[in-house]
Amino acid sequence: MIPIKITPKQIAMIIGCVLALIVVTWAIFSIKGRIGDAVTNSKLIDEVNKEIDTEKITVTQSQINTLVSKLYTAMSGWGTNESAIFDAFGAINSYSDLQSLNKTFGVRESKTLREWLQDELSTEDLNHVNEILASKNINYVF
Image (cartoon, rainbow, N blue to C red; front, top):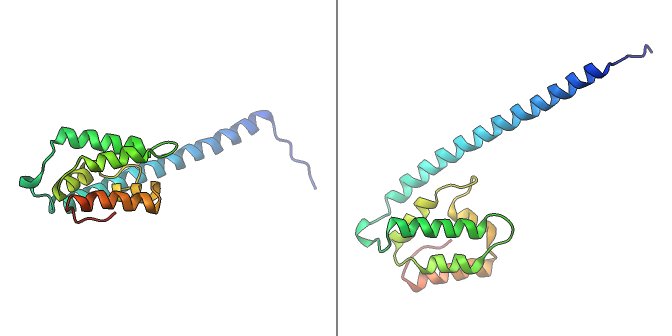
């Protein structure tokens, strides 16, 4: 067997190529994910828009934006702030409010509000969210 001699310059070039390949792969998957989120978000908005009765909305868009921010903050990062989630759902009063919330939340990190709640909450806590909705005659189950 003939020994192969690799110089430090060649090692550096190999490492550089591997790193470049990793960065390009990450960029492709990142772009693909954002495109997928945009398509999913567009479909979600189309579906939800059909179910919103603007005459039955009881909260302003500004309030919806605040609730969406509260929900996302409660679920993202380490741990889950269940009481903040319960408070957010306690602030809506109609099915149209809920659908406006779903629409504004959209798709974040490739998940809808329903998917976030199902990933973050225990069955007991998810049932509590559904009970809050049912107590307001909102016929929707997460």
